Amino acid sequence: MADLPIETIFEILTRVPAKVVGRSRSVCMEWYALLSTRDFIRVHCSRSLVSSNQRVLLIDDQTCSVHPIIFQSYDYGPRSIVTLPFDHQNNDVSILSHLNGLLCVCLNHTNELLLWNPTTTAFKRLSTPDSLGIYINNLDAVGLYADDADDYKVLHIKRRCGVYESYVYSMELNFWRNIPFLTRQEYLSPNFYWSPGTFCGGTMYFTLCECWFKEISFPPVPSTGFVQGVLVNVKNELHMFATTGWFEITIDLWTLKEDYWIKVLSCPPIPPISLSLWGDITHYVTNGNWFVMTKLGKLFTIEMDTKPFEILYPVTWFRGYKGAVFVETVVSPSI
Image (cartoon, rainbow, N blue to C red; front, side, top):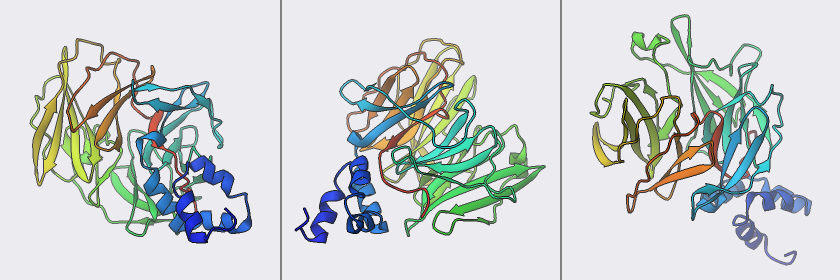
Protein backbone atom coordinates (compact mmCIF):
# COMPACT_ATOMS: atom_id res chain seq x y z
CA MET A 1 0.00 0.00 0.00
CA ALA A 2 3.06 2.23 0.15
CA ASP A 3 2.57 3.34 -3.47
CA LEU A 4 -1.12 4.20 -3.08
CA PRO A 5 -2.27 7.81 -2.86
CA ILE A 6 -3.02 8.96 0.66
CA GLU A 7 -6.68 9.49 -0.31
CA THR A 8 -6.97 5.81 -1.28
CA ILE A 9 -5.34 4.70 1.97
CA PHE A 10 -7.84 6.90 3.82
CA GLU A 11 -10.78 5.25 2.05
CA ILE A 12 -9.47 1.73 2.71
CA LEU A 13 -8.63 2.19 6.38
CA THR A 14 -11.90 3.91 7.25
CA ARG A 15 -13.58 0.59 6.38
CA VAL A 16 -11.50 -1.78 8.51
CA PRO A 17 -12.26 -2.81 12.13
CA ALA A 18 -11.19 -0.48 14.94
CA LYS A 19 -8.53 -2.87 16.24
CA VAL A 20 -6.94 -3.02 12.77
CA VAL A 21 -6.78 0.79 12.77
CA GLY A 22 -4.98 0.65 16.11
CA ARG A 23 -2.34 -1.70 14.74
CA SER A 24 -2.04 0.31 11.53
CA ARG A 25 -1.02 3.42 13.44
CA SER A 26 2.32 1.80 14.16
CA VAL A 27 3.16 1.28 10.46
CA CYS A 28 4.78 4.70 9.99
CA MET A 29 4.56 8.29 11.19
CA GLU A 30 2.52 9.31 8.15
CA TRP A 31 -0.12 6.69 8.87
CA TYR A 32 -0.14 7.54 12.56
CA ALA A 33 -0.84 11.18 11.72
CA LEU A 34 -3.53 10.28 9.18
CA LEU A 35 -5.34 7.81 11.42
CA SER A 36 -5.36 10.27 14.32
CA THR A 37 -7.07 13.12 12.47
CA ARG A 38 -10.59 14.16 13.41
CA ASP A 39 -11.76 13.61 9.80
CA PHE A 40 -10.51 10.01 9.81
CA ILE A 41 -12.07 9.23 13.20
CA ARG A 42 -15.38 10.78 12.18
CA VAL A 43 -15.62 8.88 8.86
CA HIS A 44 -14.40 5.61 10.41
CA CYS A 45 -16.97 5.95 13.20
CA SER A 46 -19.83 6.55 10.76
CA ARG A 47 -18.83 3.43 8.82
CA SER A 48 -18.44 1.36 11.99
CA LEU A 49 -22.04 1.77 13.15
CA VAL A 50 -23.12 -1.59 11.80
CA SER A 51 -24.37 -4.66 13.60
CA SER A 52 -21.22 -6.74 12.97
CA ASN A 53 -19.22 -4.27 15.08
CA GLN A 54 -21.55 -4.46 18.08
CA ARG A 55 -20.24 -5.92 21.30
CA VAL A 56 -21.76 -6.63 24.72
CA LEU A 57 -19.84 -5.49 27.80
CA LEU A 58 -20.69 -7.34 31.04
CA ILE A 59 -19.23 -6.51 34.45
CA ASP A 60 -19.49 -8.46 37.68
CA ASP A 61 -17.48 -8.57 40.91
CA GLN A 62 -14.79 -10.78 39.43
CA THR A 63 -14.54 -10.15 35.71
CA CYS A 64 -15.17 -7.65 32.95
CA SER A 65 -15.83 -9.32 29.62
CA VAL A 66 -16.66 -8.34 26.05
CA HIS A 67 -18.76 -10.62 23.85
CA PRO A 68 -19.61 -10.52 20.15
CA ILE A 69 -23.28 -10.91 19.27
CA ILE A 70 -24.40 -13.95 17.28
CA PHE A 71 -27.28 -12.38 15.39
CA GLN A 72 -28.66 -15.66 14.04
CA SER A 73 -29.55 -16.77 17.57
CA TYR A 74 -29.12 -13.46 19.46
CA ASP A 75 -26.80 -15.16 21.90
CA TYR A 76 -23.50 -13.84 23.19
CA GLY A 77 -20.38 -15.24 21.54
CA PRO A 78 -17.19 -16.38 23.31
CA ARG A 79 -16.03 -13.77 25.77
CA SER A 80 -12.78 -11.86 25.91
CA ILE A 81 -11.65 -10.82 29.37
CA VAL A 82 -10.99 -7.09 29.65
CA THR A 83 -8.83 -5.48 32.31
CA LEU A 84 -10.27 -2.18 33.47
CA PRO A 85 -7.51 0.37 32.81
CA PHE A 86 -8.48 2.67 35.69
CA ASP A 87 -8.43 2.29 39.47
CA HIS A 88 -11.47 0.48 40.84
CA GLN A 89 -12.59 -1.67 43.73
CA ASN A 90 -13.85 -5.13 42.75
CA ASN A 91 -15.11 -3.84 39.40
CA ASP A 92 -17.49 -1.51 41.25
CA VAL A 93 -18.27 0.76 38.33
CA SER A 94 -21.52 1.88 36.70
CA ILE A 95 -22.12 2.47 32.99
CA LEU A 96 -24.24 5.62 32.77
CA SER A 97 -24.32 6.40 29.05
CA HIS A 98 -22.75 5.31 25.78
CA LEU A 99 -22.31 6.79 22.32
CA ASN A 100 -20.20 5.82 19.29
CA GLY A 101 -17.99 3.43 21.23
CA LEU A 102 -17.48 5.75 24.22
CA LEU A 103 -18.85 4.83 27.64
CA CYS A 104 -19.52 7.33 30.42
CA VAL A 105 -18.53 5.50 33.59
CA CYS A 106 -18.84 6.25 37.30
CA LEU A 107 -16.23 4.87 39.72
CA ASN A 108 -18.51 4.07 42.63
CA HIS A 109 -15.82 4.14 45.32
CA THR A 110 -14.87 7.75 44.47
CA ASN A 111 -18.00 8.90 42.55
CA GLU A 112 -15.75 10.16 39.74
CA LEU A 113 -16.96 10.32 36.14
CA LEU A 114 -14.77 9.23 33.26
CA LEU A 115 -15.02 8.50 29.54
CA TRP A 116 -13.73 5.12 28.39
CA ASN A 117 -13.33 3.42 25.04
CA PRO A 118 -13.20 -0.33 25.84
CA THR A 119 -11.91 -1.12 22.34
CA THR A 120 -8.81 1.06 22.52
CA THR A 121 -8.67 0.96 26.39
CA ALA A 122 -8.13 4.74 26.43
CA PHE A 123 -9.93 6.69 29.17
CA LYS A 124 -10.23 10.23 30.46
CA ARG A 125 -11.09 11.33 34.02
CA LEU A 126 -13.65 14.12 34.12
CA SER A 127 -13.45 15.04 37.81
CA THR A 128 -11.82 18.31 38.91
CA PRO A 129 -10.42 19.56 42.24
CA ASP A 130 -13.51 21.76 42.71
CA SER A 131 -15.80 18.66 42.65
CA LEU A 132 -17.06 18.92 39.10
CA GLY A 133 -17.51 15.55 37.44
CA ILE A 134 -18.58 13.91 40.72
CA TYR A 135 -21.70 11.74 40.33
CA ILE A 136 -24.07 10.79 43.16
CA ASN A 137 -26.24 7.79 42.39
CA ASN A 138 -30.03 8.32 42.69
CA LEU A 139 -29.55 12.10 42.80
CA ASP A 140 -27.76 12.93 39.54
CA ALA A 141 -28.46 12.34 35.85
CA VAL A 142 -25.99 12.06 32.99
CA GLY A 143 -26.28 12.07 29.20
CA LEU A 144 -23.60 11.74 26.50
CA TYR A 145 -23.95 13.42 23.11
CA ALA A 146 -22.01 14.97 20.21
CA ASP A 147 -22.68 18.44 18.82
CA ASP A 148 -22.67 19.56 15.19
CA ALA A 149 -18.87 20.07 15.34
CA ASP A 150 -18.29 16.44 16.51
CA ASP A 151 -17.33 17.64 19.98
CA TYR A 152 -18.37 14.92 22.42
CA LYS A 153 -20.04 16.32 25.51
CA VAL A 154 -21.37 15.11 28.85
CA LEU A 155 -24.46 16.71 30.38
CA HIS A 156 -24.46 16.35 34.18
CA ILE A 157 -27.51 17.40 36.21
CA LYS A 158 -26.88 17.53 39.97
CA ARG A 159 -29.32 17.76 42.88
CA ARG A 160 -27.67 19.07 46.03
CA CYS A 161 -29.37 20.43 49.14
CA GLY A 162 -32.59 21.33 47.33
CA VAL A 163 -30.80 23.09 44.44
CA TYR A 164 -30.31 22.09 40.79
CA GLU A 165 -26.96 22.54 39.11
CA SER A 166 -26.38 21.65 35.48
CA TYR A 167 -22.98 21.36 33.77
CA VAL A 168 -21.71 20.40 30.34
CA TYR A 169 -18.25 18.92 29.79
CA SER A 170 -16.62 19.54 26.40
CA MET A 171 -14.09 16.93 25.30
CA GLU A 172 -12.48 19.35 22.87
CA LEU A 173 -12.04 22.08 25.48
CA ASN A 174 -11.46 19.69 28.41
CA PHE A 175 -13.62 21.98 30.48
CA TRP A 176 -16.86 21.97 32.50
CA ARG A 177 -19.20 24.95 32.22
CA ASN A 178 -22.37 25.74 34.10
CA ILE A 179 -25.55 26.12 32.04
CA PRO A 180 -28.97 27.48 33.08
CA PHE A 181 -31.56 24.89 33.99
CA LEU A 182 -35.14 25.40 35.16
CA THR A 183 -37.76 22.82 36.06
CA ARG A 184 -40.38 22.17 38.72
CA GLN A 185 -39.26 22.52 42.32
CA GLU A 186 -40.79 19.18 43.31
CA TYR A 187 -38.40 17.37 40.97
CA LEU A 188 -35.63 18.26 43.41
CA SER A 189 -37.00 15.59 45.72
CA PRO A 190 -34.94 12.37 45.85
CA ASN A 191 -38.26 10.55 45.45
CA PHE A 192 -38.00 11.35 41.74
CA TYR A 193 -35.56 9.00 40.04
CA TRP A 194 -33.94 10.44 36.90
CA SER A 195 -33.13 8.05 34.08
CA PRO A 196 -29.93 8.34 32.00
CA GLY A 197 -30.30 10.86 29.18
CA THR A 198 -31.40 9.88 25.67
CA PHE A 199 -30.30 12.30 22.94
CA CYS A 200 -32.73 12.71 20.04
CA GLY A 201 -33.24 15.50 17.53
CA GLY A 202 -30.90 17.92 19.30
CA THR A 203 -32.65 17.48 22.68
CA MET A 204 -31.69 15.44 25.74
CA TYR A 205 -34.65 13.57 27.23
CA PHE A 206 -35.01 12.06 30.71
CA THR A 207 -37.79 10.22 32.48
CA LEU A 208 -38.63 11.14 36.09
CA CYS A 209 -40.60 8.28 37.58
CA GLU A 210 -43.92 8.80 35.73
CA CYS A 211 -43.20 12.40 34.68
CA TRP A 212 -41.25 14.00 31.85
CA PHE A 213 -38.58 16.63 32.26
CA LYS A 214 -39.99 18.59 29.30
CA GLU A 215 -43.54 18.24 30.62
CA ILE A 216 -44.53 15.86 27.84
CA SER A 217 -47.19 13.55 29.23
CA PHE A 218 -46.38 9.90 29.89
CA PRO A 219 -48.02 7.47 27.42
CA PRO A 220 -51.57 6.55 28.49
CA VAL A 221 -50.76 3.28 30.26
CA PRO A 222 -52.40 1.84 33.40
CA SER A 223 -50.99 3.48 36.52
CA THR A 224 -51.51 0.47 38.80
CA GLY A 225 -48.63 -1.77 39.74
CA PHE A 226 -45.10 -1.43 38.37
CA VAL A 227 -44.61 1.32 35.77
CA GLN A 228 -41.33 2.05 33.98
CA GLY A 229 -40.43 3.96 30.82
CA VAL A 230 -37.26 3.37 28.78
CA LEU A 231 -36.40 5.84 26.03
CA VAL A 232 -34.76 4.90 22.73
CA ASN A 233 -33.74 6.96 19.71
CA VAL A 234 -34.20 5.37 16.29
CA LYS A 235 -33.45 7.33 13.16
CA ASN A 236 -33.88 10.53 15.15
CA GLU A 237 -37.38 9.66 16.34
CA LEU A 238 -38.10 9.29 20.05
CA HIS A 239 -39.71 6.06 21.25
CA MET A 240 -40.53 4.65 24.67
CA PHE A 241 -40.93 1.13 25.98
CA ALA A 242 -43.57 1.44 28.72
CA THR A 243 -43.52 -1.47 31.17
CA THR A 244 -46.70 -1.88 33.23
CA GLY A 245 -48.35 -4.42 35.47
CA TRP A 246 -47.92 -6.25 38.72
CA PHE A 247 -48.83 -9.92 38.56
CA GLU A 248 -48.69 -9.82 34.77
CA ILE A 249 -46.25 -7.46 33.08
CA THR A 250 -46.68 -6.09 29.57
CA ILE A 251 -44.47 -3.89 27.42
CA ASP A 252 -45.88 -1.44 24.88
CA LEU A 253 -43.77 0.47 22.39
CA TRP A 254 -44.81 4.09 21.79
CA THR A 255 -43.51 6.74 19.39
CA LEU A 256 -43.71 10.50 20.02
CA LYS A 257 -45.36 12.53 17.26
CA GLU A 258 -45.21 16.21 18.18
CA ASP A 259 -46.60 16.13 21.75
CA TYR A 260 -48.63 12.93 21.44
CA TRP A 261 -47.73 9.27 21.95
CA ILE A 262 -48.82 6.69 19.37
CA LYS A 263 -48.69 2.99 20.23
CA VAL A 264 -46.56 1.01 17.78
CA LEU A 265 -46.85 -2.51 19.20
CA SER A 266 -47.50 -4.59 22.31
CA CYS A 267 -45.80 -7.74 23.50
CA PRO A 268 -47.69 -10.70 24.98
CA PRO A 269 -48.19 -10.57 28.76
CA ILE A 270 -45.23 -11.91 30.69
CA PRO A 271 -46.05 -14.64 33.26
CA PRO A 272 -45.97 -13.54 36.92
CA ILE A 273 -42.41 -13.06 38.13
CA SER A 274 -40.75 -11.38 41.05
CA LEU A 275 -39.92 -7.73 40.43
CA SER A 276 -36.32 -8.58 41.34
CA LEU A 277 -36.16 -10.79 38.23
CA TRP A 278 -36.03 -8.69 35.12
CA GLY A 279 -34.06 -7.65 32.07
CA ASP A 280 -33.31 -4.28 30.52
CA ILE A 281 -34.00 -2.69 27.15
CA THR A 282 -30.83 -0.98 26.01
CA HIS A 283 -30.61 2.47 24.50
CA TYR A 284 -28.60 1.13 21.57
CA VAL A 285 -30.21 0.69 18.16
CA THR A 286 -28.96 -0.65 14.84
CA ASN A 287 -30.94 -0.42 11.61
CA GLY A 288 -34.23 -0.04 13.43
CA ASN A 289 -33.73 -2.93 15.87
CA TRP A 290 -33.95 -2.70 19.66
CA PHE A 291 -32.25 -5.16 21.97
CA VAL A 292 -33.25 -6.56 25.33
CA MET A 293 -30.07 -7.81 27.03
CA THR A 294 -29.81 -10.11 30.01
CA LYS A 295 -26.85 -11.06 32.13
CA LEU A 296 -27.54 -14.75 31.58
CA GLY A 297 -26.34 -14.50 28.00
CA LYS A 298 -29.38 -13.91 25.80
CA LEU A 299 -30.47 -11.03 23.60
CA PHE A 300 -34.04 -10.53 22.52
CA THR A 301 -34.71 -8.32 19.54
CA ILE A 302 -37.51 -6.29 18.05
CA GLU A 303 -37.17 -5.78 14.30
CA MET A 304 -39.32 -2.82 13.44
CA ASP A 305 -39.75 -3.70 9.76
CA THR A 306 -41.58 -6.94 10.60
CA LYS A 307 -42.46 -6.17 14.23
CA PRO A 308 -41.92 -9.60 15.79
CA PHE A 309 -41.54 -9.60 19.57
CA GLU A 310 -40.15 -12.54 21.51
CA ILE A 311 -41.52 -12.93 25.00
CA LEU A 312 -39.12 -11.96 27.80
CA TYR A 313 -38.11 -14.59 30.31
CA PRO A 314 -37.28 -14.09 34.02
CA VAL A 315 -33.60 -13.29 34.46
CA THR A 316 -31.32 -12.00 37.17
CA TRP A 317 -31.83 -8.28 37.73
CA PHE A 318 -29.86 -6.37 35.14
CA ARG A 319 -30.47 -2.65 34.82
CA GLY A 320 -27.71 -1.95 32.35
CA TYR A 321 -25.42 -0.14 34.79
CA LYS A 322 -23.18 -3.22 34.85
CA GLY A 323 -23.03 -3.54 31.10
CA ALA A 324 -23.78 -2.02 27.73
CA VAL A 325 -24.16 -2.79 24.07
CA PHE A 326 -21.53 -0.71 22.29
CA VAL A 327 -19.89 -0.49 18.90
CA GLU A 328 -16.15 -0.84 18.36
CA THR A 329 -14.69 2.48 17.22
CA VAL A 330 -11.45 4.44 17.55
CA VAL A 331 -13.15 7.51 19.03
CA SER A 332 -10.82 8.87 21.67
CA PRO A 333 -12.08 10.04 25.08
CA SER A 334 -9.64 12.95 24.90
CA ILE A 335 -8.37 15.23 22.15
